[in-house]
Image 1 (tube, helix red, strand yellow):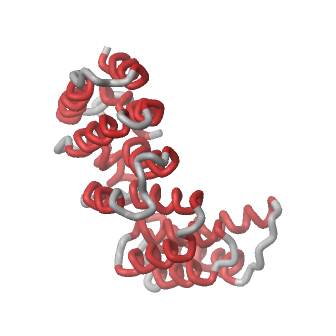
Image 2 (spheres, one colour):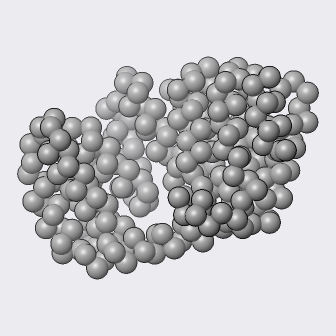
Amino acid sequence: DVAREIGEDVDPDAIHLARLTLRRAIGAAVADTALAAYQQFGEACTYKPDAADAGRRALANTALDLLVTGQVSGAPDLAFAQFSNANNMTDRFAALATLVHAGGPLRDQALATFETAYQDNPLVMDKWFALQAVTAEADVIDRIRVLMHHPAFSFTNPNRTRALIGGFAMSNATQFHRLDGQGYQFAAEMILQIDTRNPQVAARIMTAFRSWRNMEPGRRAKAHDALVQIANRNTLSRDLRDIVERTLT
């Protein structure tokens, strides 16, 4: 949203840093209020599938995320306790997402526990793959390459491919638009590979490049190089060629 508002010469790293700095300041400033809200609406509540209860869960999970982001002492342990003891998927996954984006030793433990618990649930595992693809950490591409060898991942599974590769390209602005161009190159490599199996999914992920002209000049040049690399492949599907040619013109 911020990038669209700026409109041109966008620097995703600057946006991410400004947003993170603001969220950390808010989390630290409202720590006492956030903790009180979390304790009132989160810790001791039983699950009820109604709108009022959904609102209370949303407030509690927002408060928890602010506490962790604000680097309040003990907040990661609070998030891990919610993750471990939650009686519904909304609270469990919200705590997991907070831990994953915060990083730290509890992240890998929570991810492993979640995987073991839901490895036989395809829809939930899609969320598990997607969550790891959207972290802003610099090693996310390496992590994705490791996940591509996970027994539960296959390029023949469209939903799993959209979750992991599409999640990165379409929902990870800082790492897809990396200043060194590696995000564009990785996405181009994956799109070409996916196109041989599922042209529709490849074309969908290709739309992540549509904002390339709005980036600052360095990123814009690297995105253009990746687009040309895709366009020069003479075996492209009709679906993918249509999108890449429209994106370049």
